[in-house]
Length: 383
Image 1 (spheres, one colour):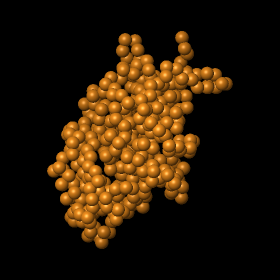
Image 2 (cartoon, one colour):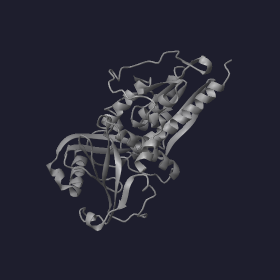
Image 3 (cartoon, rainbow, N blue to C red):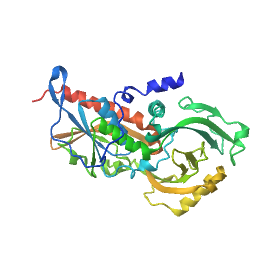
Image 4 (cartoon, rainbow, N blue to C red):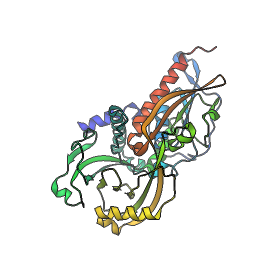
């Protein structure tokens, strides 16, 4: 019953269009045409609302897909300086894990997580799951000190949650408490290209460009959705947004099937579809995108403490990402005005280490905010 409910909870956007997986020239620069038309009630010709989504990480692409599939009288263009495999999302661990923030209302975070979980779980059920980059993953989250709540409020948002027994705890050094649960993994090196294809299937476009000012898009687009991640700091002047540097390794260790993570995610081992991800670092206000050899050694040493067989693994890749962190995730509308002109914005950034965990839930909410703009625009009489 639980699995069936999760399948239904994914929503109509999961089934309304067939998936297509063969799309050429995904990164070819495409410019929006000046006038696009759709048919309104009674067959009346209507100009499409032109929507630009800034950012091509997991948040930007999922937001673009949600807008394109839920608002048919819109044309959607994703504009980004970098696309996969060069985004921060491409080096994310990709595990749907509840990194909740005390500053953001719990009910909103829970909804974002559960919407995302339902979406990814529906994809796991398809024959294309390995190509999409999604899978079910079970494992242990361990503590060196007991948590305030032995049963967290998110325990019913994942599958098969339970407290670890003493025999399980004995396996892990210094562990005095732990949880075991089943969650989902979303490998963005596969998932982002799949989202690009799904967007193109819905009529969306991709455009390579660096946007330094929202007003560069004035007159070309009617609504701007800002999913620029850490780039939002310069683009919006939002000094509440800061980077948290994360460094990871990918190794070949196909015998590992369960995840292991230390509470707080300072050390983690996440088996994926084609590799095992080892992490990590949590370095606030560090803008360095280069791999640090000292961090590399520390990550591997710490992971080997919890899984000694990693000493037999073979290193495949190392990477660094800057988590766009903010005390409160920014998901709201804003209107800018200049010289009698008005610009409609929707902000969707500041996910921190919850980018993958919240991506579909916040994308759906951002699409609803776009819909509010579109509805109001359609109701305004033309002079």
